[in-house]
Image 1: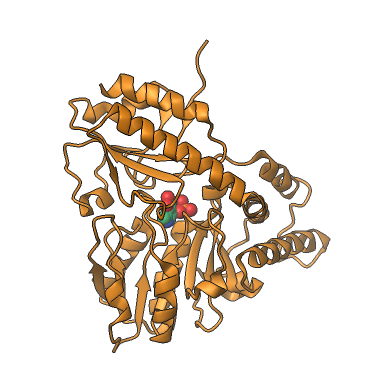
Image 2 (image 1 turned 30 degrees about the vertical axis):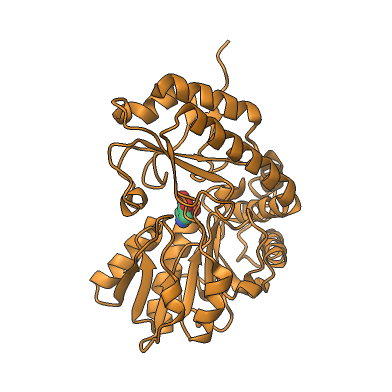
Length: 376
Ligand code: PLP
């Protein structure tokens, strides 16, 4: 009998929780009204969106009016950076070379268009942007700092609690791509003092194509998508009602079970890490290998191998889904800008294993078995 497949690419996307699908279904069938319509059908959809906003805001400890629904992490990142320039008077943008392309490419575009002076912070041996110096500086021009909370390839985390309040004090606008941490960590966005934060539902067992941008109420908004009054005039377009309802449900489930899920996933990550280092003593962990790293991601470089070119395909044939870098650019063998910035030797095949609560101990055992077969 063919064995079932193993999915360890949860940083790319997670399976939709069936309980989430169930909550979404009526909004794809019965409650199909356009939330902007004034009749009963529109009102039902509108009410569902506002219920979802309220529930999410409560779980993240912000006000509902600070949440703007978008089509996902990429749009939220674009919106944050472009809005900072178009609406908040930002002239200088500080980021790092290990950000997601949604931030990096947008930052480069803004710099090429002459709208900002761009600075990329160097990174340390764990792939963490060297943020300490930011707390010492003076900021003569209006500045946006955009640094991700957890790196999606490495799991290395930025100490937001230390950095965000200092930047706020200095009048710097701070955006954090929190796509890998929202719904995975217990977060109070108000206490964190970030100016803007991006999130995406499909990273926490919600549907694809929906996310949000949190914006602190003191920051002036600017519409980047125009042509409608949705999201208080700041993000035009008929809302993804079922997606928004599903995202709220997924966040509720994640927050209700966070401690237990975290413990379960930490156990899986530790077991896979141990098994890999036993089977491949020359393997090394990329990024932060301490308990400070995000518990869902394990990035490993294996010893040089002549199977490198075909490695992900070989694993795929064995029924193992993992990534060789960020899935947003790939699932492919195209070089990872993060591993490159980290100076990982180009002849060492690197694999990102990323977990969700739906993975099992059996997944880990079978993964180790497959790795031994394919890599040795
Ligand atoms: N930011 C990070 C850190 C991500 O990991 C991803 C997706 O992998 C994104 C942004 C993009 O999110 P979305 O797929 O919702 O556009």
